[in-house]
Length: 318
Ligand code: TXA
Ligand code: MG
Image (cartoon, rainbow, N blue to C red; front, side, top):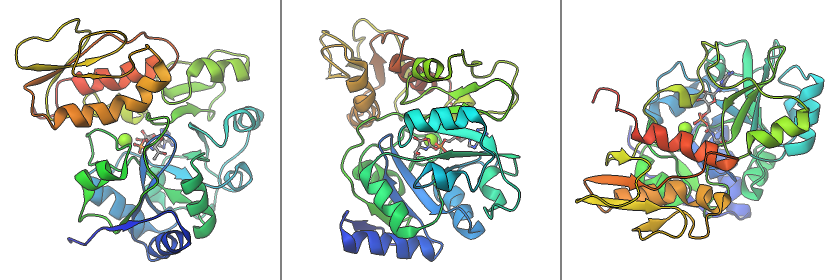
């Protein structure tokens, strides 16, 4: 059903309105330090169903629940020592922990797609934190883009994809990290990286003092990223390009001649923050193809290359 999407400012009126909308079981997109999230009350099955409906997302994909503190998180999940270590080191911040869901936690089963585990994080963005405090409950939020498309890092990106499909957007400016959170599962004996993201996996390994099992290694369960085509712009994408071919626009990295540069100085944090915005911008130019310069595969570069490979993968149904 079409609605007019309200644009809210991060002030007392905006937070109160956003909390009121969430309380009514409707959806608010809000900024986190990683990307904008499409938030709904995680205890309300109708609200969670509306998230899937607005995104056009397959139902089997479980959602991340956002809470205001590690103390709140402990009410929803079992809490091994490794969770203490990682939450202590990296929360609030761009890390999602997958942990065994506590019985009777009161979340809609749609949030976890009926898995015995829950993905949960405490975001660092001050606007997300104030929203969570004002609302006072757990907020389920995938990235605020139509399913399979590029994640939004500004309120304008959100509107471009979901205007008329959600109740409101809380505008907190551009996201500083620009890549979705790193997802680590602590649900089994050995910690496992489920999705590389805004926190380098090396930092997680250093804090734990042990290597992470890598995504996909013998694990049937998928994080979003395991769907081959994801984070896709309209235009096809060609990787590891050193020059433009006819009809292409070039997304550069480092000191190269290009249409837009992820980071002229080769700074991976700057490149991560620019990645989705530049893909949105190049897509809007209507080029026949987006060529992308090589990005080193270390630290945040692993997450950047993960998103780029998916943007370049053959499209589902294509
Ligand atoms: O940075 C982020 O993580 C952003 C912001 C809004 O917080 N959110 C985000 O959500 O990227 P989403 O839905 O696009 O990706 C979350 C992914 C799900 O697609 C799913 O594959 C994985 O997290 N996930 C959720 N619950 C899980 C679980 N219990 N076990 C394993 N993976 C899970
Ligand atoms: Mg997403």
